[in-house]
Image (cartoon, rainbow, N blue to C red; front, side):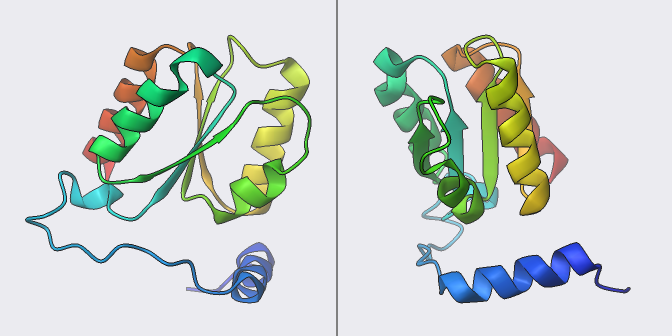
Length: 133
C-alpha cells in the first residue's frame, strides 16, 4: 500500500510535534479500550455544560479537549493533536464548520459533524464510534 503525499506530510508534522504522552492502561482498567488515551476535541457546544462533556468523554477513558468555536486562535493546534473531532452544527457558524472540516482533512483526523450540541448527541457519536472500530 502506497503512502499518499498527504499522509507523508502529516507524518512529518506529527514527528515535529514530538510524542504525545498517552496513558497506557490495560484493557481491564479502561472502560472502552478504543478510547483509552485518545484525545477527543469538541468544537463549539454549550459552554455551560462543558463539565458534562468532559465527564462523558473521560468516562470512556479518553482525554477531553474543548474549543469554544470563536475564532481560529488555537484551533489548528487542538485539531492537530486530537484523535477525533466532534463539531455540533447547531451552535457553530457555517464558516466555523468549514474551518473544522478543512483542518481535519489537512491533518487526516476523524470528524463527526453532529446535528445537536446536546449531551445525548455527543454520547451517541461516541457509542457509534466504538461500534465501527
